[in-house]
Image 1 (spheres, rainbow, N blue to C red):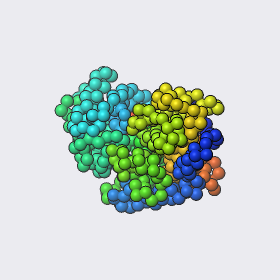
Image 2: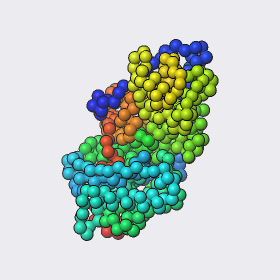
Image 3: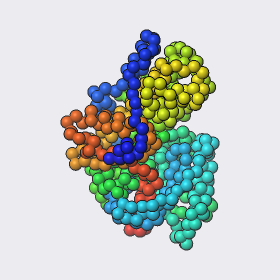
Image 4: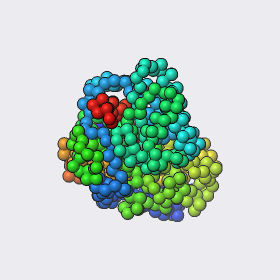
Length: 478
């Protein structure tokens, strides 16, 4: 397992004593109750998650979509060659050259390009013209010239897609702050290939890869017992290896393997609000988001949203004159003004004085009056929001493990994303949730082995392009 010490992730320091006035204490108790998930409640959420997985495997258009990836079988670790990967799905666009060297070894060269807000919400053609320009610049920057042969590229597309082949699919919707017009119902591979062709860029988009599928593949290249790839970062999603016999809705004909990777799209889990502990502060975030009533699970466990949930709680405390003597600031009053990175700093703060917490509140957020009690209340709120996210993440992992019957023999789970990589104690809180969900399994965290799949979306997409190239060579019509 990738340990916190290896990754140098700070430990969260929890406080239980606030030392506030009776009204402050009463309100904090109310907040604690709203965000606490007991072991029994966590089991109930996991059971519902598992039942929704089965629905998605059996029928189309379910809340957890359970989309077949068309990536069949498992990797050997001996795949070799140079492939490009394109990763679109968050703040940055990333172009990566991956040199697969066999035996699980590889090297990478990459460049990031910032995607502006106007590109995220404008015409999709403008977005793809920008992407084609970035790929062209990358090839020039690294002096990549393969003569007359096109360079194979795996396109990590971190949004819901109805996939019909390894290199074909129709976009279902946007998530994670994107809302470009002209994309829904279109094939992202064709949109990208057309933009590349217009600019005469010698690249063949040979695989369409969800970032979780890529994370699974990159982890499996060096860890053959990998059963799932998960993203806990700006957004959240999961993929895992499923038996073809369990994919009742499959209509794609015969396959070369009895297993296929499923892109779950679990961010939409419980959009119906049946089981999740949705608070008024979650509802406020949801209705003010660009996609209200969608992706509610993602909004409760992802780095893009945790700071905003905490901000909503803090503003109610301010409104009740229970925090900062009723004072706020322009920064705290602004949507997304309380960043999840602030939560990380505050969660890691230790000692009675909570100097780092005070610094964030007074310097970064410009709040004029901050007492020690204020700091303790804010720290408690961050702890509650962060812990709930990790426990819900544990429910998803447990659901996957139960569905794939991978607990008995053990499995590796590759996890990518800034939240998992950097947020204090996020991994330990997931592991504690797994201990509670598998009380009869000794050493559950040695059987379900979590590990950081660094650069999963890039390397995994390249591996998928490698697989697609082999498929194309075997079956030229594909």
